[in-house]
Length: 319
View 1: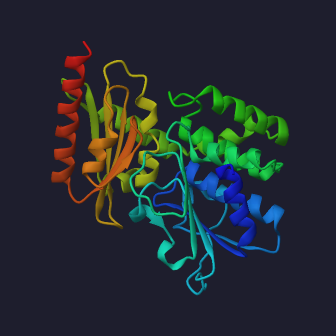
View 2 (view 1 turned 90 degrees about the horizontal axis):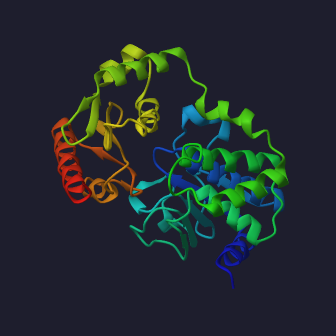
């Protein structure tokens, strides 16, 4: 049996389903989470389906998270999306569920589910939810189509990343034909922003440090973010804009998160793979787009130096 049909069989079986995703949710995590919730409830309105995790205020247009503190999950199923490792699951303890399904497009870190769909060639988890829907001949509603489209756009940076494949375009084309969503109008949900964020971005460009090996980085303190009225999530979302700067091969945004007392590292590359380096610091991600949370600025400096050495070696081999 096709693995997506196996998943659909399990969805039919359980009356209580909790859908989780990773901490620090992005459009792909949220889009896949809320789209799958909508799909299930549109097909099975009597089921109890919950989306869990800390709210992402920047992306609240996807929907509101549920609280399951008093929910008995001993006979329930948990579907975990876009999360390769157990420690990054937000809002659900998978050990408390009878059955667990994992759907993800990151390289494998932990195996923790009864059924696992892992395809690191897919551009996003939203792409995998599309595959699930079409494999089971599910007609997508406009609401589902909007969420999946935004998730794919977010994770591919408007189809610019190299893991955007012909398959991605075929699936998105089918989505657009089936749902007739106003896809150009949706871009404002992800990219509309206030003037203070634009000014903050200008500060970043003016104050980047660039090493001789082509590694650019900036340290963003809590004081600086308060001065511009932005948060660490907003700072991290600006990182993709440096992809087309000639002199930059690897770039790192390091932003202070006072709530967690950690340094949030967002790493991008157009040269060496950076996910293994991020994993050494308790993070992970894709070959060219990864992240980690660091305990202090000293650790951040070590990460910068390690990425600088990695880039130097990469350039020596690829002259």
